[in-house]
Length: 182
Image (cartoon, rainbow, N blue to C red; front, side):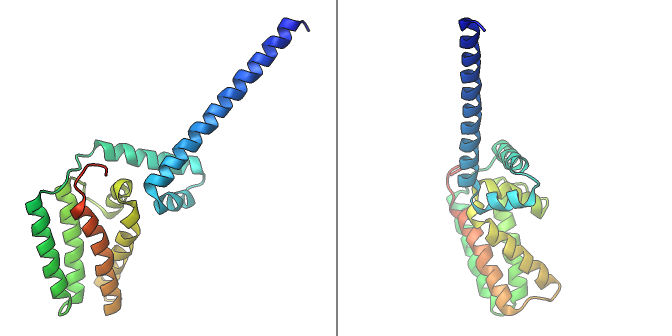
């Protein structure tokens, strides 16, 4: 082999290594971004999928869908109204805990709707919320699960109290968020 042939082989090998390195670096950046953005939701989605690439693609799709939504902050008047309604729901908990949990769920959904989140079904709400509210998503899931058990009369008063605490975590975050995408 001539010297030029060896130089060409080395150049091709260096370019190939650089391309692989670039590709790996981009994957690491994407993975870091998704982990930071989705927090515990990242690991949950990875565990649900056959491979990490599929899971990450789902999370990227969620980001894309979220970017297309018209998510907006509440006006100060709306925040005050919802905060007062939450206080009323908490006060009703003493006499009617099951009813109060149902109201809390409806109130969270109403805030989501006014903020611009679609509210058709629970799984889509969770998916949409995961982009900007990953830290409180487990609270929402737990509250929803308890609410379902309460509807079947399978939840204790302590369970219902926990549901209220979980709903409040997301409610307060939705209420106080004042900028798009945080």
